[in-house]
Image 1 (cartoon, chains in turn orange, red):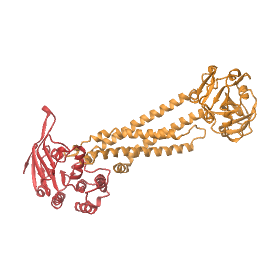
Image 2: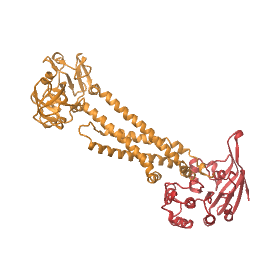
Image 3: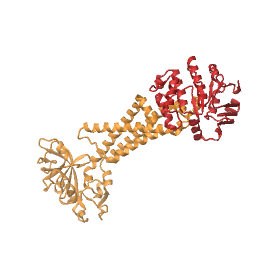
Image 4: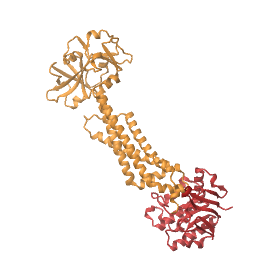
Length: 353
Length: 223
């Protein structure tokens, strides 16, 4: 550590450039991870608030709630407990006088069922009639207010916003909670249809009818349009970035080590154990990478402060810890590559000529 | 008992038709309290002799003893430890670590060998004697060739080794400094009972030596 710190202090520019590179890589990885997680959350935020385990949709709906229409006949084949709730999804465009149009996902639910009970209201109250709706906070940031009368398409008339709720997004669109009666109207279906599907917070939920297909929530989420493709793209971007970072850091450390070989040969000639030199190289890599990570994290935090509120960027501790650990591991692996050279440095090379 | 003994040491490099014998049946003894000079031209085998004497290379044949310890019987780590504790090197090239100040060159020794080094007072006296007491905060890049060489000498002596192996220690020094370094090596040998071995082609050091060996084409003779 002594040699590592002394060298960094003396060669400020050289090591500053390496730290700068780690800063840029970690900054990019942090921001990309934040965007990936933020976007993933905006696909599934509403689902996460239900704390559900299973969802049943009609067998011909291709695992999509938006495409699922469950008849009363099918619904009657399933006995619902307090752990289940009917639900219907419809894509709508919300519009109120003097406010911008917002593309949204309407979710029709029954009052008293567990999804309704799970909803948390940030202002106002939960809807109590079919003309009332509870909407995501993003409506508020777009200028909507409690009491605004909103149309949700060509048919159905106006609906009054009676409450706002937090973290209610589905497929990267704000959610509007209303009744299943309204859902039927917006979906242009008759009262022969009960709902789109059934959500349960029991892992053992399994309707005994071939008309319905039961999915776990993670299966259902992975089938959301674009969700898997988007996550896979981000994962590959981050993975490639990490691999490239490892190669670049390894090359830098290799070049630095090669430049220091005459010094290491002198130290070996004097009997300084190879272990000291290897420890120096690895601790130096760790100091550089940790320094870069700290500055990268600070830059990311500063970026979050100045980004527009609507940008889907979000962080969670396990993901950040994983990414940080990955970059640290990358640095250590990069430092381990020249270790073999250090172990074989020849002290004879510095004696005489 | 001699501090350093080489008995019938030979060293060959390469194989078959490319084989070169660099040292041929070398016999050498360095006593504590004496300066032993090994004089020879470039390519005579001086450096190979020094690396074998210091345990950095192993001979093809023959025996090397540091006091009563045979170097051939020591594994890598034990040989490192012996170099660290018993042998001080004064090297001709790349003597100092460029990113360590003069003071830190000594601190590094303390870090890997916490005991048995010179005390702060002894070090101050040594630096004063070498005329580099005012350079402790300087980095090697800020020193002249002569100053660098004197700091390298001080560093080797700081470990307080029983044997000092010096490779052309006066190569970068003017005649006045040669006398200072020669006298210092001589005094160290006498006052501190060190065995000092100097390989050089600088005949000006002869006046400070107790014994002079000549080396030519790998053969060593007592002059």
